[in-house]
Image 1: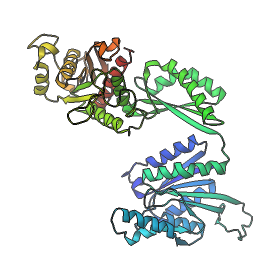
Image 2 (image 1 turned 180 degrees about the horizontal axis):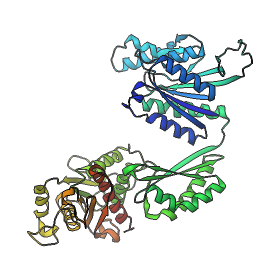
Image 3 (image 1 turned 45 degrees about the vertical axis):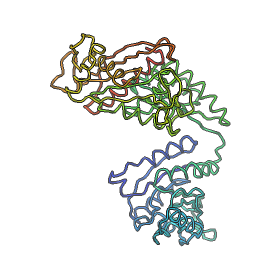
Image 4 (image 1 turned 60 degrees about the horizontal axis):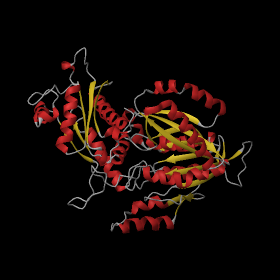
Amino acid sequence: MRTEIIAVGTELLLGQIVDTNSSWMGEQLALAGIDSHYQTKVGDNWNRIEDAFRLALDRSDAVIVCGGLGPTQDDITREVLASVMGVELVLDEAIAERIRGMFASRSRAMPENNLRQAMVPVGARPIPQQPGTAPGLIAPIRWVRGVGAVTADDNAGSGEVLERVVYVVPGVPYEMREMVSGTVLGDIQRLAGVTATIESRVLRTWGQSESGLAEMLAGRIDELDEVGNPTLAFLASGIEGIKVRITAKGADSHDAWRLIDAEQAELELLLGDLVFAYDDDTMETTVLAELARNGLTLGVAETITGGRMSNRLSSAEAAMRAGTAPGAAKVGDPGLAGTSDNGGDHASATGETDRIFNGGIVARSAHMADYLLHAGSAQVSPLGDGLVPPVASAAGAEALARAARNRTGASVGLAVTAVEDRASATEAHPFGTAFLAISIATHAGDGASPDVAHREASDEVRLPGDRERLADYSAISALNLLRLILQGRR
């Protein structure tokens, strides 16, 4: 069964909004075992939308149309659909009452133009899910290529009558996803006669390029090509690393997951330390989980990254505590409900449990960096009291890591600095050289494993790109170094 996607909205053509809806739907169709050969973007113009509809219905069995279901005059998707079907629009009182109820629940008067959203082409039916005021639609159409829609009584002449279906969903992402996941995918699978279950898992990696991963897995990919199931795909995700997706088809979900689990074990043997998380988990949630399981807290000092690490860590921890982190890490996991250096949960004066991430210091000026390194420099400087190393150096990063630990009261200090000024670059340390350092000071009896009870480490890496990419890559590289140490891999 051939399916295609039409995204409606002039803002998509102007680049004012990136069309992530089509890419998400394309991925879901693939995972559902449905062929999808075309994706089209079209502006808010009646003739061009109609042309896109007719072309899609000529060549595809099912068409998913996204956008143009709002209450304003430029939201014309439902009107064009009715025209293509050759039918009238009628008011669906049940939808109208639901929309009125949404406004009433917010103590707001409903503008009359919102009733446009309750107009449904004759022969179409609403999608049951309606998280917003825009209802989705399912419209079966009897279609003749090059002719158009025909009724049961029409004489199609020499043309073959084709059974088509159009699904119309809103452009608001969360509304679209609820309708596609709740109704559209299952309906298309039913029409296509798809009975197998398709599941997938993503292995998230850091430290190797896409081509490097492909080379490492070349032999395994060749083996899988022979059997055809499961399959592997690569997705480059910038500072989030390279994703390796395993997709398997089975008679049922259990059968598909059995294949995925076996393949994951094979890949982890080949990729080793490169794998840092799975599915929607991130480097931050992985690091925070490892800190919690070791009964450790973290403080960071940043120069080049300008607060990126602190922002990522604080946002991830807040989501984990609230149970809204996109991955598996959440409150209730061992150690994640709040920890202290001895691994226990303790209420603070405000009634909150202690946090894993104590805080961060952003040292952008020489004065601030100098203050950090001189404050208690006998504890932080390898050169002795009153003598501090250059900030953009391995020794400087190590000193900042100790300062981060001491000044935030954490058991682990993490620091990152870099040669970010081309004028100060040298042949030995060119622009893009980043220095990463970690300082751990605790006792094994406090909950940390013996391998990380007391440890200092640093790394010097060369990173690509302009200053912004250097800052982003420095942050994720520093977190990855901490992950490897906490997991006993370094």
